[in-house]
Length: 354
Ligand SMILES: [Zn+2]
Ligand SMILES: [Zn+2]
Image (cartoon, rainbow, N blue to C red; front, top):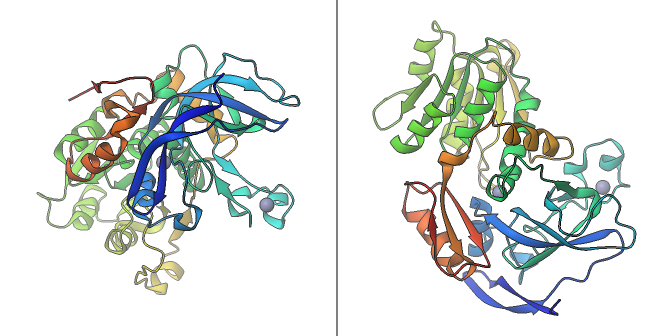
């Protein structure tokens, strides 16, 4: 194997270079993975522009990925060269208060592959063997690169504990589409997805939403959700946009005694206005969820492998690694693009769905 590889390096905010870098050296309990596909995520834009992880640059971003095991460390158990895999990107110290409490996402040394340490917009990436998950034969490399976002949505869904026959309103039609699909899986009815993009809302409907509300047509989504739930508001509301306004809408849209799942990521200094009255007398609950972790990964793999979640309509394009920066920009300007994958071994882009 060569000592160097092609990688997309964010050198400083706004500067991304495709260049040769050393192939990662693995420790005994790590494996080296030859990357097949990496999905582009909003976080990659934030890293590219310096809104996120600016103190970690230069860095190779990329965290939604699939690949094959290329090299196995001496003490890395349970994996063989050539096996098709993805990896849980969430790494923690294992010994702090939070790790010992089983809350590794709160670890004081929490770091994520491709967000805080070098990731997968490259030919190879290394990962600790106990974070690597094999992909079953009925899960292809593209869906394998989509396990990470599905695991995040599963984590949120488990935190909210959506139950059979309960109404779920999802604000947002990015990953909100997946939240709708998962609410359907959990037996919710009706599942309402609210967004601003007709094409994405049509996909949401195909993937399990009973009702979609386009905010360009519906003036007041809160009133509309109340109308659909006999005036009460939804039993569960998922905020999957990440703006103060939509968080306030979520709290207004959930019924007394209901639960808001906080999923969309706001800016660090954003604040919202909450009436404590609604939380106390209205017994409204807010549950946060940061990422898919641990068991959320095999759970995501199972749902994808058996087709209970069919994300293919969300897959737009595969682009060569050399076009990563162009694709990051296209995702900002073309509202009809959904998931764009990057591959280091192709020279021409491939269209997956229009
Ligand atoms: Zn992501
Ligand atoms: Zn820890």
